[in-house]
Amino acid sequence: MEETTLRLIERVKQGDRDAFAALVDLYKEGAFLVAFRVLRDRMEAEDATQEAFIRVFTKIDSYNAQWKFRTWLYRIVTNVSIDRLRKKRPDYSLDAEMSGTEGLTLYSQLESKDQLPEDQVIDSEQRQNVGEAIAGLPEKYRIPLVLKYIEDLSLKEISELIDLPVATVKTRIHRGREALKKHFGKR
Amino acid sequence: MTREKVYERIQDYLDQNQPPEDFKRLEAELREADAMNEFEEYRLLDAQLRTLPAPKLSADFTSRVLAQLPEQVEHPNVTPLRSSSRFGGKMKQYPLLAAASVFMLLSVGSLGGYLTQEEKDLSYTNVPGIVAENGEVVVPEGVTVDQDLYVEGGNVRIEGKVNGNVTTVDGKAYTASAGNVTGEIKQIDQLFERVWYGIKRIFE
Image (cartoon, rainbow over all chains, first blue to last red; front, side, top):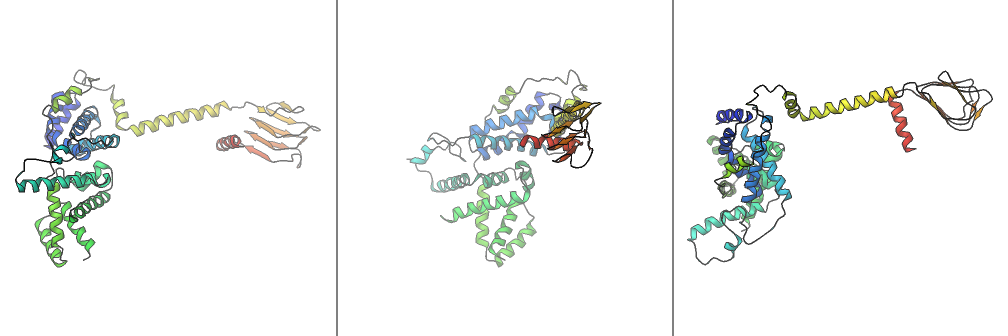
C-alpha cells in the first residue's frame, strides 16, 4: 500500500487528478473516521474530511516521503476537525442524529413502542453508553483516546497528530480510560 | 504492587498489542495482586471502544472532493522543467527561512540607511553666541550658555562656560579647563548607544 501511495503522490504532484481520486479512495474511510471521532457529527465530519483532502491536493508539494502518508493526512484531518470543533456552537435538536450513533435520534430515545429482543437492547444500550460517556469526557482526554482506537494508531503517531509529547498522550489516554471505567463502575 | 501500578500495567498492556508471553506475565502479576476483575473491566471497555459505531461515508464523496478542487494554476505536464518556480518551491518548503531572510534584508537595509543618513551632518542646539566652523561647534571665551548643549556629527570645543549638560553624538567634547561645564559631558559615538540614547529621549 505504501508503494502504491508513493506512486500516486508522485502523479498527483504532476497534477494528475485521476491519481488524486485513487488516493482519496484509498484513504477516505480512515480519514472520515478520524474526523467523525473528533467531531461526533456525520455531516460535519464529511465536510471536514473534504476540506482536508482539498488541502492535501493543494499542499502535496510540501509532502515529504520520509513521513508516512497516513500520518500526514490524519494530521491534517485532525487539525481541520479540531478547528471546526472549536468554532461549532453546541445545539441540540430532537431530529439531530445522536453522537456516536447512526440513525439514532433523540426521538428514538423518548419512547419506543416496539420492543427489541432483549439481548439486542443490552448490546446497543451498552455501546451507546460508551459513546455517551466518551462524549462527556473533556476534549483533551477524549481526542487522544478516540484516536487510539482508529486503525490501532500508535502512541507515537497520535503524538504526531496532535502535537503533544508521547508521554502526555499516554497519560491522557490512561486518564480517559480510567474515567470511563469509573463511569461504568458506578452503575 | 500498588493499585496505581496495577492500573498502569493494564493500561500499558492495552496501549500496545504485546506478545502473548507478556500477557502471561501480566496475568500472573494481576492474579497475585488480586486485580483480575479490574483487568476484565478494562478489557470490556477496550472491546467496546474498538467497536464504537461508525457511520458510512457518502457514496459520492470522492467525486464531490474532485469537483471542489481548485483550478490548477500551473501545468507541470506542459512545462516539465519547472525551473522558474523552483525558488518559489523552496520558499514554500521553508517558510520560516524565507520570512527570516526577508526580515534580515529589510533590517540590514534600514540600518544602512540609518548609518549613511547621519554622515557628517552637523547639527547642534542653536544658542546665541556659539559658533560653528569647520565642522566644529565652538563656545567662545566669555560666552556663557545657560542650557543643555547637544551637538551631532561634529566635535565641540568649550572655551566659555556651559551651565548644563553637553551631549555629543559622533564627536568629541573638548573643554579648555575643568569646571567649564556644570552638568555632565556625554559622548555618544556608537550605534547602539545612539539608538539607546534615542529611546531614552523618547521616554524622558
